[in-house]
Length: 360
Image (tube, rainbow, N blue to C red):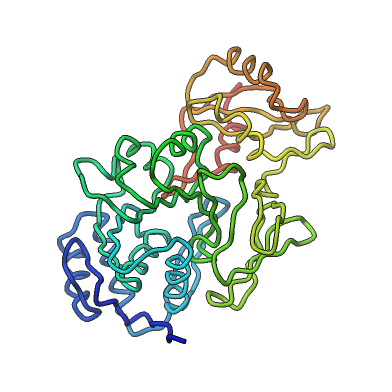
Protein backbone atom coordinates (compact mmCIF):
# COMPACT_ATOMS: atom_id res chain seq x y z
CA UNK A 1 0.00 0.00 0.00
CA UNK A 2 1.38 3.41 -0.98
CA UNK A 3 2.29 5.71 1.88
CA UNK A 4 0.28 8.91 2.05
CA UNK A 5 2.19 12.10 1.19
CA UNK A 6 2.74 14.70 3.89
CA UNK A 7 2.30 18.43 3.50
CA UNK A 8 5.89 18.92 2.31
CA UNK A 9 5.38 16.49 -0.60
CA UNK A 10 4.34 18.99 -3.26
CA UNK A 11 3.61 16.92 -6.38
CA UNK A 12 6.12 17.28 -9.22
CA UNK A 13 3.24 17.94 -11.64
CA UNK A 14 1.88 20.85 -9.60
CA UNK A 15 1.67 24.13 -11.49
CA UNK A 16 0.51 27.54 -10.34
CA UNK A 17 -0.53 29.98 -13.06
CA UNK A 18 1.35 27.90 -15.60
CA UNK A 19 4.62 27.52 -13.68
CA UNK A 20 6.06 24.49 -11.90
CA UNK A 21 6.96 24.97 -8.24
CA UNK A 22 8.53 22.72 -5.63
CA UNK A 23 7.86 23.05 -1.90
CA UNK A 24 10.95 25.24 -1.49
CA UNK A 25 10.09 27.39 -4.54
CA UNK A 26 6.75 28.38 -3.00
CA UNK A 27 8.38 30.72 -0.50
CA UNK A 28 9.23 33.16 -3.27
CA UNK A 29 5.72 32.85 -4.71
CA UNK A 30 4.15 33.53 -1.31
CA UNK A 31 6.46 36.49 -0.66
CA UNK A 32 5.67 37.97 -4.09
CA UNK A 33 1.91 37.60 -3.55
CA UNK A 34 2.08 39.26 -0.14
CA UNK A 35 4.24 42.18 -1.28
CA UNK A 36 2.97 42.82 -4.80
CA UNK A 37 -0.20 40.78 -5.30
CA UNK A 38 -3.82 41.79 -5.66
CA UNK A 39 -6.02 41.45 -2.52
CA UNK A 40 -7.03 37.85 -3.28
CA UNK A 41 -3.40 36.94 -4.00
CA UNK A 42 -2.16 38.47 -0.73
CA UNK A 43 -4.46 36.10 1.19
CA UNK A 44 -3.12 33.16 -0.80
CA UNK A 45 0.41 34.30 -0.03
CA UNK A 46 -0.39 34.38 3.69
CA UNK A 47 -1.75 30.84 3.53
CA UNK A 48 1.25 29.54 1.61
CA UNK A 49 3.56 31.08 4.22
CA UNK A 50 1.62 29.24 6.93
CA UNK A 51 1.80 26.02 4.89
CA UNK A 52 5.58 26.34 4.46
CA UNK A 53 6.08 26.94 8.18
CA UNK A 54 7.56 23.84 9.91
CA UNK A 55 4.67 23.79 12.41
CA UNK A 56 2.48 20.74 11.85
CA UNK A 57 -0.78 22.62 12.48
CA UNK A 58 -2.75 25.54 11.06
CA UNK A 59 -5.33 27.81 12.66
CA UNK A 60 -8.53 28.00 10.60
CA UNK A 61 -11.56 30.23 11.10
CA UNK A 62 -15.20 29.30 10.55
CA UNK A 63 -17.46 31.36 8.28
CA UNK A 64 -19.79 32.60 11.03
CA UNK A 65 -23.00 31.83 9.14
CA UNK A 66 -24.54 30.20 12.23
CA UNK A 67 -22.93 32.31 14.93
CA UNK A 68 -19.76 34.13 15.85
CA UNK A 69 -16.77 33.03 13.73
CA UNK A 70 -14.35 30.91 15.74
CA UNK A 71 -10.79 29.73 15.29
CA UNK A 72 -9.88 26.05 15.12
CA UNK A 73 -6.54 24.25 15.05
CA UNK A 74 -6.03 21.47 12.48
CA UNK A 75 -3.11 19.30 11.44
CA UNK A 76 -1.75 19.94 7.96
CA UNK A 77 -1.79 16.18 7.45
CA UNK A 78 -5.57 16.23 7.95
CA UNK A 79 -5.83 18.74 5.10
CA UNK A 80 -3.67 16.46 2.94
CA UNK A 81 -5.98 13.55 3.79
CA UNK A 82 -9.01 15.65 2.85
CA UNK A 83 -7.44 16.50 -0.51
CA UNK A 84 -6.79 12.81 -1.22
CA UNK A 85 -10.40 11.90 -0.35
CA UNK A 86 -11.70 14.59 -2.71
CA UNK A 87 -9.46 13.30 -5.48
CA UNK A 88 -10.78 9.76 -5.03
CA UNK A 89 -14.43 10.80 -4.77
CA UNK A 90 -14.52 13.04 -7.84
CA UNK A 91 -11.98 11.19 -9.98
CA UNK A 92 -9.47 14.04 -10.07
CA UNK A 93 -6.38 13.03 -12.07
CA UNK A 94 -2.72 14.08 -11.95
CA UNK A 95 -2.18 16.97 -14.35
CA UNK A 96 -5.83 18.07 -14.40
CA UNK A 97 -6.37 21.78 -15.04
CA UNK A 98 -8.14 23.42 -12.09
CA UNK A 99 -9.55 26.88 -11.39
CA UNK A 100 -9.04 28.63 -8.06
CA UNK A 101 -11.74 31.31 -7.71
CA UNK A 102 -12.60 31.15 -4.00
CA UNK A 103 -11.38 33.42 -1.24
CA UNK A 104 -8.45 31.84 0.58
CA UNK A 105 -9.69 33.58 3.71
CA UNK A 106 -11.87 30.50 4.22
CA UNK A 107 -11.37 26.76 4.21
CA UNK A 108 -12.74 26.10 0.71
CA UNK A 109 -10.20 28.45 -0.87
CA UNK A 110 -7.37 27.03 1.23
CA UNK A 111 -8.29 23.45 0.33
CA UNK A 112 -8.21 24.15 -3.43
CA UNK A 113 -4.56 25.11 -3.00
CA UNK A 114 -3.84 21.99 -0.95
CA UNK A 115 -5.55 19.75 -3.53
CA UNK A 116 -3.49 21.25 -6.33
CA UNK A 117 -0.19 20.84 -4.46
CA UNK A 118 -0.89 17.29 -3.25
CA UNK A 119 -2.75 15.86 -6.28
CA UNK A 120 -0.52 17.45 -8.91
CA UNK A 121 -2.98 19.85 -10.54
CA UNK A 122 -2.33 22.77 -12.87
CA UNK A 123 -4.01 25.59 -10.94
CA UNK A 124 -5.03 28.96 -12.34
CA UNK A 125 -5.80 31.69 -9.78
CA UNK A 126 -8.39 34.38 -10.54
CA UNK A 127 -10.19 36.99 -8.46
CA UNK A 128 -13.24 35.57 -6.66
CA UNK A 129 -15.35 38.58 -7.66
CA UNK A 130 -17.64 38.97 -10.68
CA UNK A 131 -17.59 36.44 -13.54
CA UNK A 132 -14.66 34.18 -12.68
CA UNK A 133 -14.52 32.85 -16.28
CA UNK A 134 -14.72 36.26 -17.97
CA UNK A 135 -12.44 36.60 -21.01
CA UNK A 136 -10.95 33.19 -20.18
CA UNK A 137 -11.41 30.49 -22.85
CA UNK A 138 -9.55 27.82 -20.84
CA UNK A 139 -11.31 24.48 -20.33
CA UNK A 140 -10.97 23.30 -16.73
CA UNK A 141 -11.21 19.74 -15.50
CA UNK A 142 -12.09 20.79 -11.97
CA UNK A 143 -13.39 23.88 -10.12
CA UNK A 144 -15.35 24.86 -7.02
CA UNK A 145 -17.66 27.87 -6.81
CA UNK A 146 -20.27 29.42 -4.56
CA UNK A 147 -23.76 29.81 -6.11
CA UNK A 148 -23.44 33.50 -7.03
CA UNK A 149 -20.24 32.73 -8.96
CA UNK A 150 -22.04 30.00 -10.89
CA UNK A 151 -24.84 32.45 -11.73
CA UNK A 152 -22.35 35.04 -12.98
CA UNK A 153 -20.41 32.50 -15.06
CA UNK A 154 -23.37 30.49 -16.38
CA UNK A 155 -22.84 31.53 -20.02
CA UNK A 156 -19.36 29.92 -19.89
CA UNK A 157 -19.91 27.21 -17.28
CA UNK A 158 -19.54 24.45 -19.89
CA UNK A 159 -15.79 25.24 -19.83
CA UNK A 160 -15.70 23.39 -16.48
CA UNK A 161 -15.92 19.60 -16.71
CA UNK A 162 -16.44 18.88 -12.98
CA UNK A 163 -17.90 21.64 -10.81
CA UNK A 164 -18.43 21.65 -7.05
CA UNK A 165 -21.10 24.07 -5.80
CA UNK A 166 -20.94 24.84 -2.08
CA UNK A 167 -20.81 27.51 0.59
CA UNK A 168 -24.57 28.13 0.43
CA UNK A 169 -27.62 26.28 -0.84
CA UNK A 170 -28.12 26.81 -4.60
CA UNK A 171 -31.61 27.85 -5.70
CA UNK A 172 -33.89 25.51 -7.62
CA UNK A 173 -33.64 27.72 -10.69
CA UNK A 174 -29.83 27.56 -10.58
CA UNK A 175 -29.92 23.78 -10.27
CA UNK A 176 -32.30 23.59 -13.24
CA UNK A 177 -29.91 25.68 -15.32
CA UNK A 178 -27.00 23.43 -14.39
CA UNK A 179 -28.98 20.31 -15.28
CA UNK A 180 -29.13 21.46 -18.90
CA UNK A 181 -25.35 22.00 -19.09
CA UNK A 182 -22.79 19.36 -20.05
CA UNK A 183 -20.81 20.24 -16.91
CA UNK A 184 -20.80 17.45 -14.32
CA UNK A 185 -21.98 19.51 -11.32
CA UNK A 186 -22.20 18.48 -7.67
CA UNK A 187 -23.76 20.19 -4.64
CA UNK A 188 -21.45 19.66 -1.68
CA UNK A 189 -22.04 19.43 2.08
CA UNK A 190 -19.39 20.28 4.63
CA UNK A 191 -17.95 22.84 7.01
CA UNK A 192 -14.66 24.11 8.39
CA UNK A 193 -14.78 21.43 11.09
CA UNK A 194 -14.68 18.73 8.37
CA UNK A 195 -12.16 20.63 6.19
CA UNK A 196 -14.80 21.37 3.51
CA UNK A 197 -17.06 18.78 1.97
CA UNK A 198 -17.67 15.31 3.38
CA UNK A 199 -20.56 14.52 1.01
CA UNK A 200 -21.95 15.48 -2.38
CA UNK A 201 -24.93 14.95 -4.65
CA UNK A 202 -25.06 15.15 -8.41
CA UNK A 203 -27.10 18.04 -9.77
CA UNK A 204 -28.38 15.69 -12.48
CA UNK A 205 -29.64 13.02 -10.06
CA UNK A 206 -33.39 12.71 -9.56
CA UNK A 207 -33.18 12.79 -5.76
CA UNK A 208 -31.63 15.00 -3.07
CA UNK A 209 -29.46 12.30 -1.51
CA UNK A 210 -25.92 13.21 -0.43
CA UNK A 211 -23.28 10.47 -0.71
CA UNK A 212 -20.32 10.63 1.67
CA UNK A 213 -16.65 10.67 0.72
CA UNK A 214 -14.30 7.74 1.40
CA UNK A 215 -13.68 7.10 5.11
CA UNK A 216 -16.64 9.17 6.35
CA UNK A 217 -19.07 7.60 8.84
CA UNK A 218 -22.47 9.17 9.54
CA UNK A 219 -25.01 8.64 12.32
CA UNK A 220 -28.04 10.46 13.69
CA UNK A 221 -28.44 11.60 17.30
CA UNK A 222 -31.57 11.86 19.44
CA UNK A 223 -32.35 15.29 17.93
CA UNK A 224 -32.36 13.72 14.43
CA UNK A 225 -29.21 15.72 13.64
CA UNK A 226 -26.22 14.50 11.68
CA UNK A 227 -23.09 13.31 13.50
CA UNK A 228 -19.95 12.82 11.45
CA UNK A 229 -16.87 10.69 12.08
CA UNK A 230 -13.85 11.25 9.84
CA UNK A 231 -10.90 9.49 11.50
CA UNK A 232 -8.38 10.70 8.91
CA UNK A 233 -9.33 14.33 9.66
CA UNK A 234 -10.09 14.46 13.37
CA UNK A 235 -10.43 12.08 16.30
CA UNK A 236 -13.52 13.89 17.55
CA UNK A 237 -17.05 13.22 16.35
CA UNK A 238 -18.41 16.34 14.64
CA UNK A 239 -21.86 16.97 16.09
CA UNK A 240 -23.91 19.18 13.76
CA UNK A 241 -27.24 20.98 14.06
CA UNK A 242 -28.24 19.74 10.60
CA UNK A 243 -31.51 17.81 10.56
CA UNK A 244 -31.24 14.82 8.23
CA UNK A 245 -32.89 11.63 7.09
CA UNK A 246 -30.35 8.79 7.02
CA UNK A 247 -30.83 6.79 3.82
CA UNK A 248 -27.97 4.32 4.27
CA UNK A 249 -24.60 4.00 6.01
CA UNK A 250 -23.14 6.24 3.32
CA UNK A 251 -25.98 8.58 2.33
CA UNK A 252 -28.45 11.08 3.78
CA UNK A 253 -31.00 13.75 2.88
CA UNK A 254 -30.44 17.22 4.32
CA UNK A 255 -33.61 18.81 5.73
CA UNK A 256 -32.40 22.01 7.43
CA UNK A 257 -30.90 23.23 10.69
CA UNK A 258 -32.52 22.46 14.02
CA UNK A 259 -31.77 25.96 15.29
CA UNK A 260 -33.85 27.40 12.43
CA UNK A 261 -36.96 25.28 13.09
CA UNK A 262 -40.15 27.30 13.61
CA UNK A 263 -42.77 26.08 16.12
CA UNK A 264 -46.02 27.41 14.70
CA UNK A 265 -49.07 26.36 16.66
CA UNK A 266 -47.27 23.23 17.84
CA UNK A 267 -46.29 22.23 14.28
CA UNK A 268 -42.58 22.24 13.43
CA UNK A 269 -41.74 24.01 10.20
CA UNK A 270 -38.26 23.74 8.64
CA UNK A 271 -37.50 27.03 6.82
CA UNK A 272 -35.01 25.49 4.38
CA UNK A 273 -37.62 22.91 3.31
CA UNK A 274 -40.16 25.67 2.66
CA UNK A 275 -37.58 27.69 0.72
CA UNK A 276 -36.78 24.72 -1.50
CA UNK A 277 -40.46 24.19 -2.31
CA UNK A 278 -41.02 27.79 -3.42
CA UNK A 279 -37.61 28.76 -4.79
CA UNK A 280 -38.60 28.06 -8.40
CA UNK A 281 -41.39 30.63 -8.04
CA UNK A 282 -39.19 33.49 -6.79
CA UNK A 283 -36.35 35.16 -8.69
CA UNK A 284 -34.97 37.61 -6.09
CA UNK A 285 -33.11 36.92 -2.80
CA UNK A 286 -35.48 35.73 -0.06
CA UNK A 287 -35.67 33.56 3.02
CA UNK A 288 -38.24 32.10 5.41
CA UNK A 289 -38.18 33.01 9.09
CA UNK A 290 -40.67 33.66 11.91
CA UNK A 291 -41.94 36.46 14.13
CA UNK A 292 -43.87 36.27 17.39
CA UNK A 293 -47.61 35.67 17.19
CA UNK A 294 -50.16 35.62 20.03
CA UNK A 295 -52.12 32.67 18.66
CA UNK A 296 -49.44 30.55 17.00
CA UNK A 297 -46.46 31.44 19.19
CA UNK A 298 -44.40 31.85 16.02
CA UNK A 299 -45.74 32.53 12.56
CA UNK A 300 -43.99 31.87 9.29
CA UNK A 301 -43.04 34.95 7.27
CA UNK A 302 -41.40 35.51 3.89
CA UNK A 303 -38.66 38.15 3.65
CA UNK A 304 -37.39 39.73 0.42
CA UNK A 305 -34.26 41.75 -0.17
CA UNK A 306 -36.08 43.93 -2.68
CA UNK A 307 -39.60 45.12 -3.38
CA UNK A 308 -41.85 42.50 -4.94
CA UNK A 309 -45.54 42.20 -5.77
CA UNK A 310 -46.61 40.28 -2.66
CA UNK A 311 -50.12 39.55 -3.85
CA UNK A 312 -48.91 37.89 -7.01
CA UNK A 313 -46.24 35.84 -5.24
CA UNK A 314 -48.48 34.68 -2.39
CA UNK A 315 -51.22 33.96 -4.89
CA UNK A 316 -48.83 31.88 -6.99
CA UNK A 317 -47.60 29.96 -3.94
CA UNK A 318 -51.18 29.16 -2.94
CA UNK A 319 -52.11 28.22 -6.50
CA UNK A 320 -49.21 25.73 -6.78
CA UNK A 321 -50.31 24.09 -3.49
CA UNK A 322 -46.72 23.19 -2.60
CA UNK A 323 -47.00 24.28 1.05
CA UNK A 324 -49.11 23.06 3.95
CA UNK A 325 -51.30 25.49 5.91
CA UNK A 326 -48.64 25.94 8.60
CA UNK A 327 -45.82 26.37 6.07
CA UNK A 328 -47.66 29.09 4.14
CA UNK A 329 -46.19 32.56 4.93
CA UNK A 330 -48.62 34.66 6.96
CA UNK A 331 -46.84 37.93 6.13
CA UNK A 332 -44.34 39.26 3.61
CA UNK A 333 -41.65 41.79 4.54
CA UNK A 334 -38.93 43.71 2.72
CA UNK A 335 -35.44 44.69 3.83
CA UNK A 336 -33.06 46.94 1.95
CA UNK A 337 -30.23 44.48 2.54
CA UNK A 338 -29.77 41.11 4.23
CA UNK A 339 -26.87 40.39 6.57
CA UNK A 340 -24.19 38.17 5.03
CA UNK A 341 -20.92 36.62 6.16
CA UNK A 342 -17.65 37.61 4.48
CA UNK A 343 -17.96 34.70 2.06
CA UNK A 344 -21.58 35.41 1.11
CA UNK A 345 -23.65 33.15 3.39
CA UNK A 346 -26.94 34.50 4.72
CA UNK A 347 -26.84 35.28 8.44
CA UNK A 348 -30.39 34.25 9.33
CA UNK A 349 -30.41 35.28 12.97
CA UNK A 350 -28.85 38.68 12.31
CA UNK A 351 -31.18 39.37 9.37
CA UNK A 352 -34.24 38.29 11.35
CA UNK A 353 -33.14 40.59 14.19
CA UNK A 354 -32.88 43.39 11.64
CA UNK A 355 -36.43 42.59 10.54
CA UNK A 356 -37.75 42.63 14.12
CA UNK A 357 -36.03 45.95 14.84
CA UNK A 358 -37.51 47.78 11.86
CA UNK A 359 -40.27 50.34 12.51
CA UNK A 360 -43.76 49.27 11.44
